Image 1 (spheres, protein in one colour):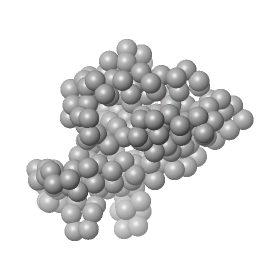
Image 2: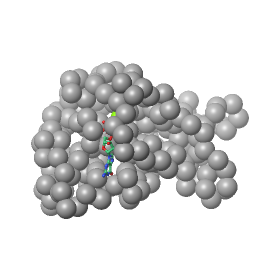
Image 3: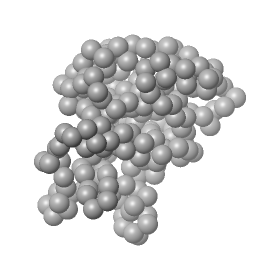
Length: 209
Ligand SMILES: Nc1nc2c(ncn2[C@@H]2O[C@H](COP(=O)(O)OP(=O)(O)O)[C@@H](O)[C@H]2O)c(=O)[nH]1
Ligand SMILES: [Mg+2]
């Protein structure tokens, strides 16, 4: 399974993934270098699927992020910052690029991040929900800083991807992880439950440039 996170620069995409993956948050805006991803697992009954979540790597300003990733993606998280109107207005642009370059049946979700900055909010929940509905998406609000709704967001998009791929008769057998050879990072919640640690994923490879 491949999921991508899109949205303007500095809305918190890397922070969302970092918080999800290793429960860390930093106040620094560390530009992602190259194409970055985290790896996790999605469990459904007896089955376990490898999931790669691609981060859009600091090229946001061009709005032309590596379209081959769009084509591979089964799921998209479109993110904006609830304190930044422009990032919300640009959701339209991001949606257009998805319509143009991604599979039409791709699973999608809209996310308004930084809800810990409620006093600086400039995008209402109602406005965001409306746009999301117009594009056939659900809307989540998150705080990567305070770890609000992050696990739920990622669980939601993986559930949607699963439903799309496996409830509609298509199959991706090669994606099934048999748990023997691949080095995988379990979801943090699962790791916590089992007491296991978490490895560092692709998000470690960043530069402070
Ligand atoms: N207050 C607050 N700041 C956040 C949140 N998420 C990210 N940030 C900050 O916003 C800036 C950009 O975050 P980053 O994850 O690098 O954004 P990206 O360019 O979309 O990947 C950084 O300074 C983060 O610390 C959040 O939920 N709340
Ligand atoms: Mg980033």
